Image 1 (cartoon, rainbow, N blue to C red):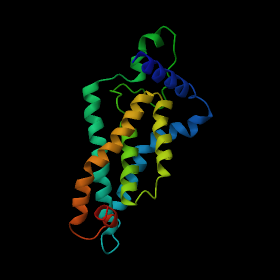
Image 2: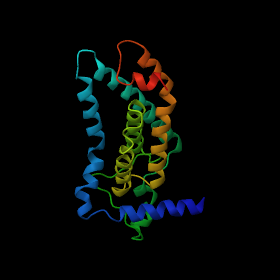
Image 3: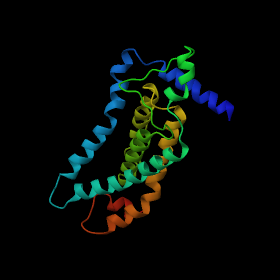
Image 4: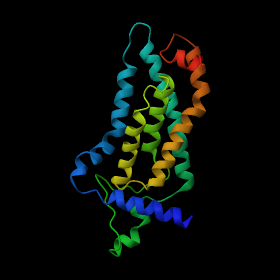
Length: 197
């Protein structure tokens, strides 16, 4: 356990130590915009109506899947009560032993697991269930988005890894309800995938 903790902290300081340079323009802004962009994506689909309600039905399936991947991490976060990196290293920071870069804001709430990582991996997993793994290329994108949470000093790498796993697991756990949802009402774009597997 001490070894894993030292690796976790070592990777954190390496990634977080890159902050404050030109990468801020890409990575820091990316992490800042993750949640708003995902919600904009969902809202756009919510209000698209194409006659059969295909996109609107698809959006509800996506929401149900993502919700399953996000709610569990939020509950875990309150149970585990792990401090954010800035709080975890507060004494060392005060003594000048370490530096923790925080971009945009100082994160003080609980750290484990990462809600952002859970959200992006839940959405990507839901999309791949719907489109029969045709969007697997989104997983590396989700990984980069999740890593930005370490870059800005919001999470330890283990928080991000746990968040990603929770997001994926949450979608798979809600999968039976997604199938049931697709069986009711108008046809939906995911029906061939969810009903024929």
